Amino acid sequence: MKPMRSLIAALAALLTTACGNADDALPVDTYSGPPKPALWKIADADTTIYFFGTIHLLPPGLDWETPAFKDALAQAGTVYFEADTELPPNEITRIIQRTGLLPPDRNLSDLLDPAEQDAIRAAAHRVGLSPLLVERMRPWYASVMIADAAIRSAGFAQDSGVEALLRPAAHAAGKDLRYLETVEAQLSAYTVLPDDVQVRLLDASLKDLDKAGEVLTGMARAWRAGDDDALAEAVIDDQIATLPEIYDTLMVRRNKAWAAQLDAVMKNEDGVFLVAVGAGHLLGPDSVVVMMQRLGHTAERVQ
Image 1 (cartoon, rainbow, N blue to C red):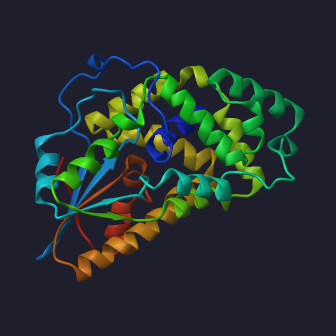
Image 2: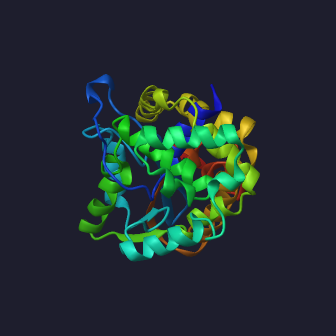
């Protein structure tokens, strides 16, 4: 699998602050069979945590809820999400300005060679982004915005993603909503990457944009079917091999921080909790579930 294909799939699983809806919805009848996305459970005498891997952007109308998931949600008094993305727009704008934009005296093209400059201008035009706006972006943010535009044009929408449906349902049911990190901390995970690594991420995001629909449909099928091996290949495996610094920053470090928080919940709180985070965080050798096991908690796959 090419790095771009892995990156597009990974960004679909990771993007939680992107905006906008799908331009052309993909037919959901291409997803056959009953849904069974992965659901894990860790429990002791008085505390239970369910772990559900999400996809933040999905085709409108795709069915994925199952009796097992609905039962876990019904039991849970508290639902954890990655970050509270429903902040006031002006606050989101300030966070993006701090983490996603270059200082006034720098432009994105200053970090790129002539071929990369041509490629970013062509990609921006293709996905409908202003080249002047892209010039103000840090490389990581340009890569995310281009990938997000490609994802949406392939028929995937954030308002059809798991969190967009689960959060209001949990709120309406009177659940306590908690967050594993802030939006600024989430985006700052990119900003700690050196410029050259960010440029590598950007270079990868400029390739094979026309294959976004094919890649994302395969990823969503694997997720919906509970096929962790296929999903890990799309979201994790190539990232480890080709973009290890990004994997370490966006996955390993965050997973470790989240596992420490949830370990404290297991030790200090009673009741049932549901943790809904991007599917990539529950896959591979450094997943949150694996890290919880390393902390002494036995995990059971219940779906």
